[in-house]
Amino acid sequence: MGGLWFTEKQTENFGITIKVNKTLHTEQTEFQKLDMVETPEFGNMLFLDGMVMTSQKDEFVYHEMMAHPVLNTHPNPENVLVVGGGDGGVIREIMKHEKVKKATLVEIDGKVIEYSKKYLPEIAGELDNPRVEVKVDDGFMHIVKSKNMYDVIMVDSTEPVGPAVPLFERGFYQGIYEALKEDGMFVAQTDNPWFKADLIRKVNKDIKEIFPITKAYHANIPTYPSGIWIFQIGSKKYDPEAVDINSIPERETKYYTPRLHHAAFVLPKFVEDLVK
Amino acid sequence: MGGLWFTEKQTENFGITIKVNKTLHTEQTEFQKLDMVETPEFGNMLFLDGMVMTSQKDEFVYHEMMAHPVLNTHPNPENVLVVGGGDGGVIREIMKHEKVKKATLVEIDGKVIEYSKKYLPEIAGELDNPRVEVKVDDGFMHIVKSKNMYDVIMVDSTEPVGPAVPLFERGFYQGIYEALKEDGMFVAQTDNPWFKADLIRKVNKDIKEIFPITKAYHANIPTYPSGIWIFQIGSKKYDPEAVDINSIPERETKYYTPRLHHAAFVLPKFVEDLVK
Image 1 (cartoon, rainbow over the protein chains, first blue to last red):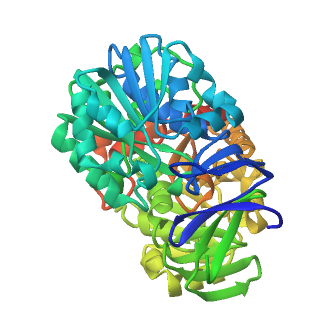
Image 2: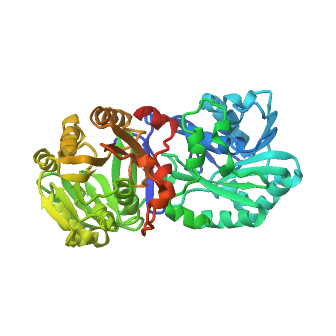
Image 3: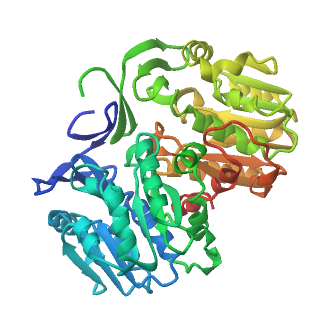
């Protein structure tokens, strides 16, 4: 175990530990502690407040699985909003959808964007796409000010720590409902069912009270706590489980496939029980 | 990070670290290093050669997902063999199937059985079921000696380290083919696709050369490397993906469901590419 290791305590009593070649950048930004490190196992990695945000090796899972299920469900997702997601990975996946005319990224911490562009260029590369508008701003306030504006909203936040805390409140989901057009839908990451069962249960309940269609799905992310991650959809009209997979165009992906679109919604029993 | 922590290096450059209340038993057996520890996060845990074998908190995933997919595929699994699996978890799940008349467990290391019974009683409890025969013996040799004998064989081994190395050889799968009846099928755990892609590719290729039907499926296991685990089926006649889920009786499970039976075979793209 010699040398430099970055250890994330994923719970009080459990953590992962990752060998680090060198630290690329460390800074206490206005909002959070930002660490960018180079690792032999996962390539360059971004940590916020000591939690893994993304790594070059496994980033494709989270980013594909946030973007494609909703964009392949909504028939005409012209105007898309991403709250958070300053690394640009979700934007990169959104740009694979030709129906999207405009994607707006509202990231509270400009430093995340700056250092992702510098050290995670294959993740952040599409942030300069002319179809993308990047705003360094408070996503919660942006939602409050937006009415009947977006077809799809994606909440790519950290876990409910630091600046992301309000993004897990019921009032935020109500704001999202109002920011969406009459057939709009949204997706948010809601952490993992092994260590954060209560959070998943609460968010699912909150969204169910607001949206007529509420669905949860999962993906495997090795650098995230427990290796399984839950995404929650709230939709005014379109049901992601009703999608005809034969209608989904082939796109270059490493995790998502049309068949997986449906399989991802089939949850392990104990997770199903959380979102009943 | 004060106090006692058990760290498993899952790769050269990545590990998990688990707070330990106390060590219950530590022994260098004839075959491997055995550690039984009590942890606040996962309950009692069994480690062999420093690798997590099972924990009270998440054991149900591995054990259910090894047993139920094949037993719900084979129409008449009367005679079942488990190679390894001395903790008894797979046997416990097999015993939920009333069609199974006899299950034989062949575990090379009697100490695993002894200390699982002592410290993991809710996992090992069915080892004393009258339908179960427990043999402390070399599973590889048991397979070599068995011809046309079993309906279903389950290989519940460690990773290919120490006594489990021969259980990942092509010759072993040929032996399994011969030990199975003419409509028999088997399942083996084949590690994870993030850090052991070559192993999964090799095992899949080996099994494909021997069995007419070869399928891989996955499950999420938080204490195993990368959190996603692959199981590989070789079958002489029955296709696990052809099962009518309406024919599957309700059984008490925490992970497996009839719907998940099919979803588990839908693999992420990069895993699908390993087992094409």
